[in-house]
Amino acid sequence: MGEEAVSKNFIEQEIDKDLAEGVYTEVCTRFPPEPNGYLHIGHAKSIILNSGLAEKYHGTFHLRFDDTNPTKEDMEFVESIKADVEWLGADFKDHLYFASDYFEVMYECAVKLIKKGKAFVCDLSPEEIREYRGTLKEPGKNSPYRGRSVEENLKLFEEMKNGVYKDGEKVLRAKIDMASPNINMRDPVIYRVAHMSHHNTGDKWCIYPMYDFAHPIEDAVEKITHSICTLEFEDHRPLYDWVVKECEFDPAPRQIEFAKLYLTNVVTGKRYIKKLVEDGIVDGWDDPRLVSIAALRRRGFTPESLRMFVELCGVSKAQGSVDYAMLEYCIREDLKMKRPRMMAVLDPIKLVIDNYPEDETEWLEAENNLENEALGKRKLPFCRELYIEREDFMIEPPKKYFRLFPGNEVRLMQAYFVKCVSYETDDEGNVTVVHCTYDPETKSGSGFAGRKVKGTIHWVAAPYAKKAEVRLYGNLIDEEKGVYNEEDGSMNINSNSLEVRKNCYVEPNFADAKPYDSFQFVRNGYFCIDAKDSKPDAMVFNRIVSLKSSFRLPK
Image (tube, rainbow, N blue to C red; front, side, top):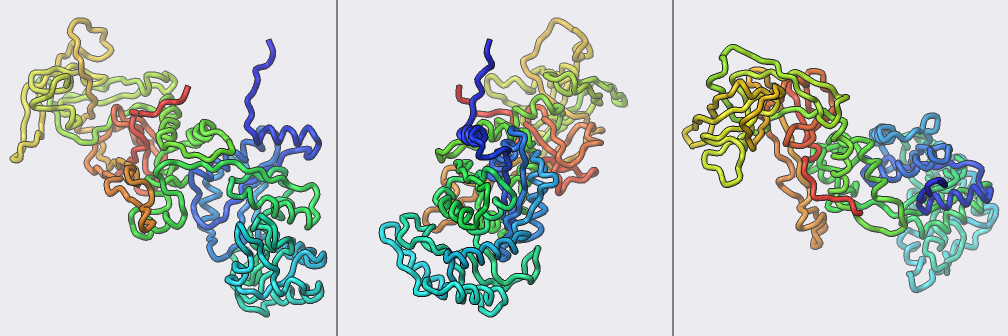
């Protein structure tokens, strides 16, 4: 039999062609974030795609901070991005770069363009430049300063660098074609005056390159072979290629575009998240209701689940959106065989086994995960007083309710059959205690035969239980209205996106649990220990995802 055919996406097909034709001898990719905010799920796709291509072709992956705009950048974001990329498993060891390290090279490239008659200093204001640019239907018109001599342009550009001019007073523009059908090619601005400190270069520079000029130079200097970016840069590709060619870089990097990853009913825009943080609607950029990578990590998502998600979404040129349920499917699939299944009661009422010895405690053996024996077993304390879920007892149950009610018998998971004999209520009629009797012949694992019960409920032993806070997350966005209000652009926030339960009880087997550790709470979903607020003596759990899903993979 021949080898099984391997399906390749269009980017891999292009890389194969370039390697076969000898355009490049090896593959080098990069992820180039601007350090002006936290990364989100869309960035995760780019990180996983770029680093995955480098790994697949035994090449090199670079993490490079595109820090050419000092107005928005912050070292806090630099550190958060490094942590995110590393957490996702992208290997950038010995290949961490900053675009600002190339400012001298960019300046020299600008001087080269001036000497070649391909760039000029322009005195038009930003408003005038927009006015001269034309429209999609009408060509632009030349700046009155376009005809300046090479000598004058060199002199003025040096004066710009030396701080002679105020912000916005002069810019350096590429000299290309004001009649080009591609507006990006209509003499774009490539340098501006900006008197401000930079987080990396301090006050050395008072002129800064524009992104469309800086980015191709960064790629070329680092010998990136394939500059993989999203579709909005497709119209910028002719300018990318022009800069690389006119600055005489060889070999030239190649830009290839793919469709962005859009998730339904989530907020990814940095300015919107910033407003959510400032307004106190979320508790930071890593609030588990967001889809920043830091938030997903804090919520309990794993790198493996995000890689599975990106793989399922695929790589294409067609823009589209993906339902959040697919992301939830991936984390369930990743965790179901890896994590222990523990008992936790999120809305407790007390259950008293009247015929169980008052001062006795049994230590029952329980499988950590019935589908994965390798996770081993643990001991559970069992005694007279337990906590059960409030919803597992009803005074007057509906039909097909198989849990506890007066006269009914259920199995206590991993323990015994118990039968409800009575209950207590408070002054408002709320049930506070359920009284049962147990059958000592029905111990789990004892091989008993005979009676059967239809209901099984979970529990924790009251004297041994650990009190915990549990946070149940819903969608931050009102799904019926969509993310943004069409009238004023505001966000349609779901006021019930977070439910905090402070009086929950978990079994005592959490002594060694650490922040980000995750577990399945039997019948309640997957949860992880909150990395920000949880303490050993006051545990806080975030619900990652419920157990049930409506999502099904397409066949």
